[in-house]
Image 1 (cartoon, rainbow, N blue to C red):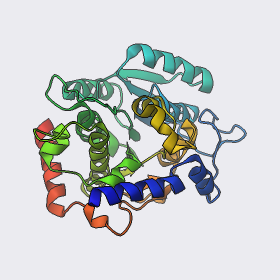
Image 2: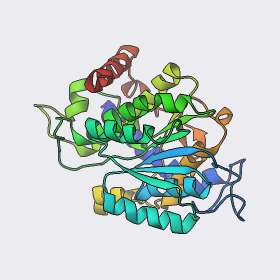
Image 3: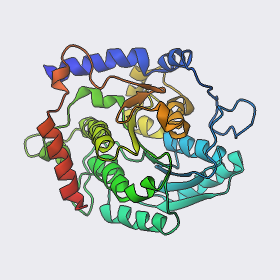
Image 4: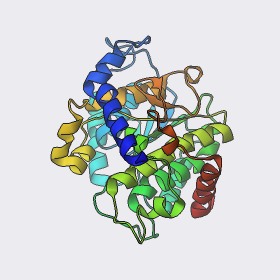
Length: 335
């Protein structure tokens, strides 16, 4: 019953806030400048006043969709940008397009499979060999699969790419570089889909079903996304000098959404453009940390509720459950 009610509440709330209509309504209440394209450079007409010169920005999944727009935004603002991508060919194509759009060629590609812990460790070692600090880490990469897939390390791919590796391990390994920044932040790009569920027991989270359940790709995704929201809260306590945030882009038309939902994406219309979904996350990257609420879950520049409606107890985790999640994350990556 709780699952059905939470799903209904999510859809009703989403129709009001996550669509393009919701974005335009929120936009009207912005108090700081906003720009209508990610490629507007510092000082150019229509710019939002953000300057990321001298900043080191890392964006995972930076070759398409939300990640590409965030990478473009960082480059346009003068950042030294590292694109963490799995496909060399797609990354190089996107890098060229970003350089052409922003005239910033201080962009490097680091190849990584976010579902593979060893790949993440190698990518971080490569980055640490180049940079002593990281100012902004955007954990955006991951997949939404309809069929269960497992990595050669034995992890379910959605869980591993979004939470275990792509958020927890990557962030933990870069804590020293983030602490070297004057105003650091970690941004977990979560999803409104986390509203439908708490973080489940570890066996369910890591297999998204188990022996008695069929694999459900949407639930696997929602579990990982709820996990990111909880992880941001815990990192805010563990590392108070770093603004650690979770956020979501609303219902945005990206290649990943198109692939996962197909014709069913009509129920999310009118969908946001990629930049309308990315713009509020770009704001989190560039605004002074003093404007941000550590551990909060953001949409369109504003902290949001983390549970919906009168049956919020269904989607809430206990303190012991969160402690277990954190302990298991550490155990699984041994860091």
